[in-house]
Length: 440
Image 1 (cartoon, helix red, strand yellow):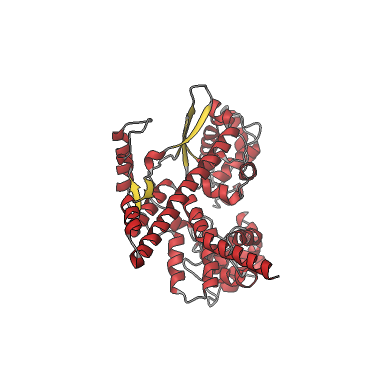
Image 2 (tube, helix red, strand yellow):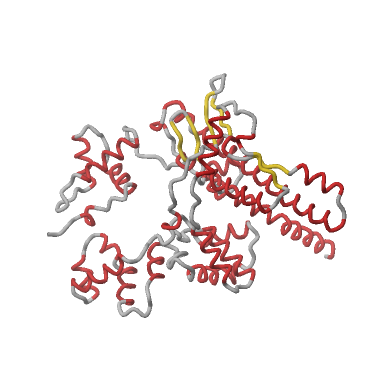
C-alpha cells in the first residue's frame, strides 16, 4: 500500500506542477491574433527573459515584402485599445471578494465557460466534465455556490442558464410588480411572442393597460447581459492561416506568421544564468522557466491550430475548388474525433481565427455548419439578402408568413422553400409574423 500511495502522490504532484502550463496553453489557444499580440507584449514587459522579434524585424516573407508586413504591424500597433472585456470585469470583481481559494477558483472557471451573451449556457454535465479535465476540485460542494456567486456579480443577469433566468436575476424582489413580472417571464413568453395579449391579461387577472406596463418593464431587462461588454470596436482582421494551391495542384494549409512576433528566450539571460549563483541564479532560473513556458504554449497553439485547419480543409476541398455553394456540413465533434482532441479544444482553436482562401477571408468557425436544405440552390448571401428585402417591403398590418415570403421569392426568381425562409429569417433576427403585426 505504501508503494501505491507514493506513486499516487507522485502523479498528483506531477499533475499539479503541470497544471499552470496546461491552463496557459488553453488561454493562448482561444486568443485571436490581435489578442495574442497584446498578451505577448504584456508578458514581455513583465519578464525580460522573454524576447519578442517583431514582424518587421524578421527576414522578408516569401508571400510579400517587408513594407507590406510593416504596414500590417503598424495597423495593429495603432489600433485603439479595447475596453475591459466581460471576463476581465468579472475577474476584477471576484478579486475584491474574500472567498476561499477553491471557491474563487470555481467561479473563475465558470467565468471562462460563459458564452458571448454572458450566459452559462453549457449544461451541468459539460461544466463538471471540463472542470474535472482541468483538475478543479470540490465539484459536488462548490458547483452550486460558485454559480450563485457568479450570478451576484455585475452586470446583473450574468451567469443565467438561459435568457429567462438572466432576466429574472435582474428583477428587484422588493418591486411591487415582481410577482407578476416573474409569472410573465416564466409562464407567458410564448403567448407574448405570439402577441396574445388579451389571453395573457385574463390569465393574470389584470387589464390590458396593466399588462402593457408589465411589458414595458420587461423591455428594461437584458436577455444577453454580457453582450454589450463583448461587443467591441471592429478589429483589423489578420488571417492566421492561408490555404492555397501547391505546385502539384494539391491544397496546402499554412500558418501566416507575419502578423505575430516570434517568441524565444533572451540569449543574454541564458548567458547570465550560466555564470550566476545563489539568489541571482534562482531569480534568473525562474524567469527563464516562465519564458520557456510561454514559448512552449505559443508553439502548442500553432501546432493545434494548424492541425485543426488541415482537418477542416481536408473535408472542405470542394469549397476550395468550387466556392461557398459547395460548403459541406461539418461538426466540431467530427474533427475532434479525427484528431483525438476534446470538442472544447476545437472550439477554442477556431475562436477568433481567420483563414485566407481563394474565396476571400473567412472566420475559421464559419466552416463548421450543419448545412442548408437540399433545395437551397442559390448562393447563401444572395438568398439571405432576398429574404431580408421581402420582409422589409411587407405591410406591417398584414405581415407575411414564411410560406407567403417563399411565394414572393419565387415570383422574383429565387427558388427557396419555406424552411429556407424560416432559417434565414431567424438568422436575420426578424421576428415571426405574430410579433411583427402592428395593431391600428
